[in-house]
Length: 261
Image 1 (cartoon, rainbow, N blue to C red):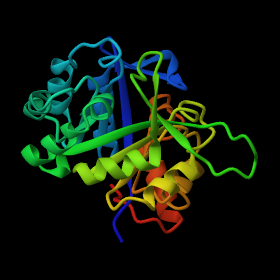
Image 2 (image 1 turned 90 degrees about the vertical axis):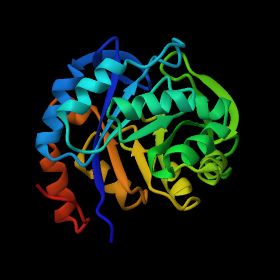
Image 3 (image 1 turned 90 degrees about the horizontal axis):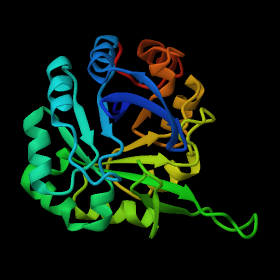
Image 4 (image 1 turned 120 degrees about the horizontal axis):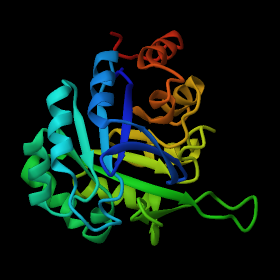
């Protein structure tokens, strides 16, 4: 059985790591390079670095911060935010990223997924999906989620169903999916497990849970009940609630395979 991964997420705005609630009300969480180095030493399996306002501000991602971060860490680094073309992907990979994550650009130009996969390999192309639950008219109605773009700003709803979009992204060549629950983001109330289950059972590539981690039980639920291959978390690590080692030992104690340091 493949090991489950613990991945700290560094959301960067104006050169600083920030954390918000449901993609808003951001507070400062530290220097991205320093935090990345700390998590590398603590035994994180990977790091995800998002320039969260690059798409909403319609500007390029901060290459210098990516270069500095890549120079400090020796684990896989995924970079996203403001990546709109294959040339942008190449620039990030040259700057030191191991994978590139696309979200808004993938929705607006789905063939970008295929172009990136053909140029760099599917293993380098991650599609991040920001999803919000659709209110149910009746309690017996099936759960549905809508895809949002430009979520570093106010966010823009699309007409895409999150599960259908996940399947299409994989068909186009995505090698991995990050599933962000807008409803759960920053609440520390737990991941959206039905959303994770729905997508993990529909695709054949690794699924990373994102949004809502508040306890170690939440991470455990994401990789067991939610069937995720990895758990992305921010607040619980940035503000010292738990360490990477504590998270991994907790999973190991519950018979979840992890890479222990």
